[in-house]
Length: 174
View: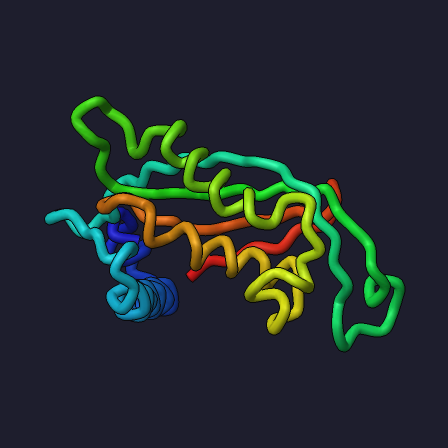
């Protein structure tokens, strides 16, 4: 809008429309900025007011486990299993001296350790799923809670996504 002329050929209706558009754009900018000011990862403005670039890496690993959904009516209330796929998404605005956000090997090691205690188990008997329903959503949050504290700053675990099947997945983002 700043590149548009201040008035469109002297037509008062066009000038008024342009003034309204500019006011709406300013208000939108303030509203968006105030929403993201509360979110530390998004509050990365440069002196010119643009958000800094964010780097992302992800790793995936699979495991097999059984479960039965409590309080659910349907075939998933019965004991059944899945070949799960878990994806971690890590982000940072900075890279280390080697040009890495985080070493893939380290991130895979952390994920593998979290998966190891669930692999080839009946989830309903393993904490916290002996108390919390072992839904894909709750599992995504479980992996986030287990892994996030192990990601070295300034990187942070941005999301965990878990697939129960090739076409069904749940994600958790803090």
